[in-house]
Image 1 (cartoon, rainbow, N blue to C red):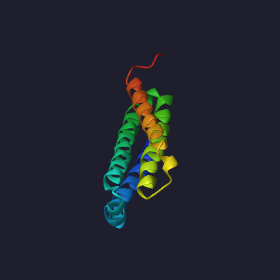
Image 2: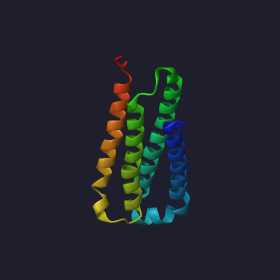
Image 3: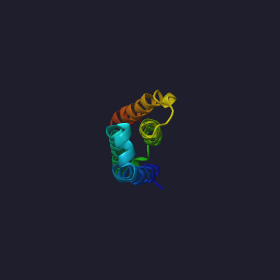
Image 4: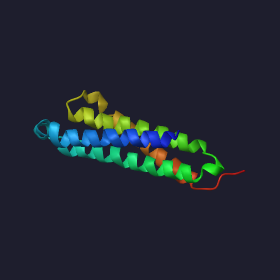
Length: 128
């Protein structure tokens, strides 16, 4: 089983569902609260990470003979946690969630960035 592929599928599925929910089912609520742009940003980052995980899964499969570096699992964890914290907190705030969620958003952003940093590091050849 490919953990990045599983995560990509889950984030893709939930990202499309939440994007559609914001565009249709919650449209009036989000407009009334002035949170349409925030919801759209959350959904966009959510889907970006799903696509990135799909690419990571393809890279993992293409390099299967060399073995999967531990960084692939870390990248996957960080991107999933980042989506939950970053996009999740924005979704919740857009629907009137408690204000203490505000500081959670940048923590999720940092998790996303650290995952991308690890992806850059994974581009370098491993020592044998």
